[in-house]
Every structure is written in C-alpha cells, then in structure tokens.
Image 1 (cartoon, one colour):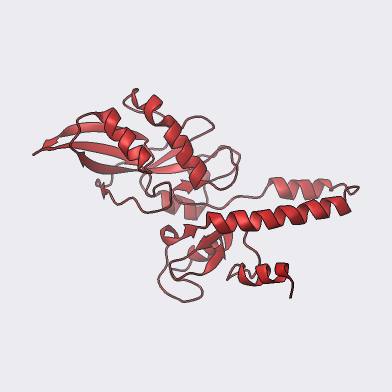
Image 2 (cartoon, rainbow, N blue to C red; image 1 turned 180 degrees about the vertical axis):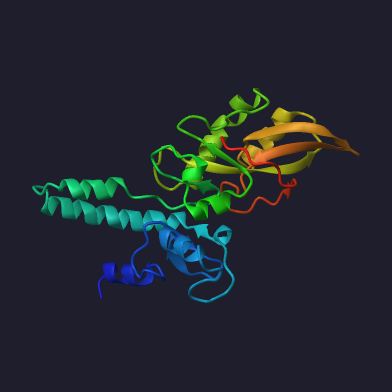
Length: 246
C-alpha cells in the first residue's frame, strides 16, 4: 500500500469516505468533511459513528490536518496540471466551480462571495442566527457600528486576525452572528478592557460600560459565541433581545 493510499484510508470523512476538503473533528474523535457533517446535523443530533449527542458548536476545525491534506492536494494538482496543461475547461465546468457554496463555520453564516440578506440564508443558517445580530463584515468592516469610536484602532486588527483564524479559506462576504454578553472587570477603561478581551481571543463588535457592582465594573459586550481558537465563549449571556439585522 502506497503512502497516498494510507493517507486516504486514515484521513477520510466518516460520512463520505472521501478525503475531507475542510476537516472537522467531533468530541469523540471522528473526522468529517464540514459540508457533510453540517448537512447531517440539520436533521440529526448525534455523531453518525458513535451515536453520542452532538451539536455543530461541538465540532472543531482541524487546521493541522487541513494544512497536511492541502499540501497533498496541491501536489496532486501540480502533477495533474502538468499532464493536462493543454486541456481547456468547458463553460459548464467553470460555472460549477464558481457556484460552490462554502459550509457554515460557527460563529459565521454564509461564507460565500456574494452579499446576502438574512431572509435569503438557508434554513439551517437562519436557525443558527436565532434572534441575535447578523453582521455582514464585508471586506474591511471588522468592527462596524461601535458605540465607542476609540475601540476601532485598538481592536480592529485583532478582529481581522480573529476572522482569518476562524475562516480557513478565502471568501469576500462572511456574515458573523453577534450575541450580547455581560462582563465584569476591575478596570474602568473601556479601551483597556476591549484590548484585554481581544487579545484573549474574543471578537469585539461593541463594548460599553453600564455601571459598578462592589469593586467590579460592569460591561455589555457584543461578541461571537466562540473565541478565535474555536473554544466556547463562556461569558454570561444577556436575555434575548429584539432581532437586529445589519
């Protein structure tokens, strides 16, 4: 058995039995292609292999496996292009390539290259959105509509890093789901607290001071439900509020 055969045997999606284009791993250790497992979870609430309870939020993107398989795929494509460099793809083949829809990766919905309104999102993405804020990040709006303009120069570059860490492929119009959290800290500086949170992996959409309890200053933070490494945001959520769509 060749090395490539071993790779295809041990690094394959448990659903499609093919090499995953975007490898995701569940808590029980099974490997899936993102598109396949998210499609499965639209109608099921268990791991398709172990049948243990499973939600989309529990899936973890495996960047090391993605880089490893990506390198192999690139080498294969280089060899293939050398062998077929005189072949020209048909119009239909080009159309199929450009219409592929990238799968959703929490906390994002719609990772395509066209602007979409919330009403145009697939049903599973609207369910994930729930009653929280949907923000179209566009190309440069990584900290849009903040109530504190001093935050932008402080956290904007960290928000850009957050988005790049969470999206393992290029897309022009990621839409992020932003939720409302409570946060307490000894510092009364919104800028310093925002900087601290951003450096600890939190996406900062907005942050503002609301008062003081004992020796701690209270803040409202608008952020995503996962940090930049994919771990859960364990801050306390505010009660549900009216839906706002950006």
